Every structure is written in structure tokens, then in C-alpha cells.
Amino acid sequence: TKTLSIRTKDGSEVKVAYNEQTQISGATDQAAGLATAAGSKVKVETSGEGASAVATKISVEAKDKK
Image 1 (cartoon, rainbow, N blue to C red):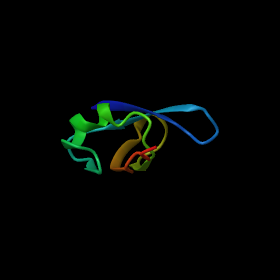
Image 2: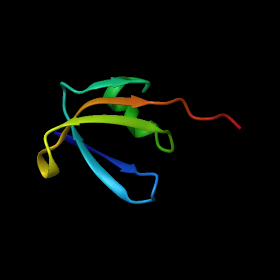
Image 3: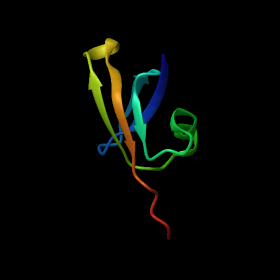
């Protein structure tokens, strides 16, 4: 299992576990692309609760180009 750190709207940081079964969209090269998605908005769906929660789906939105 791998983890992803996400900063929430209120500024707190949450670590989310994901695995080979996690569906990843919007990131180049799927899971490998998550490392280059820093600063992007993401939507995460999980199963389980607390420390045993695992992402079932991670959607990465395109970064705003300024």
C-alpha cells in the first residue's frame, strides 16, 4: 500500500492509502503520475474507516495555467 498526502480546504493535511486496485484518473502514468500532480485539486473516494481507509478512486483535476 502506498500513501498520498492531501491538503484539505481548511489547510489540514490528510494521508490517504492507495493500492493497485485504486482507480486513478487525470494523472499521467496513473499512480506514478501522482508524484507530479502536486498543487492539483483531487477528489478521493475511500472504503473503510480511520487508519484502515483505502482510496478506491482518485481523480486529479488539471492544473490551472496562468
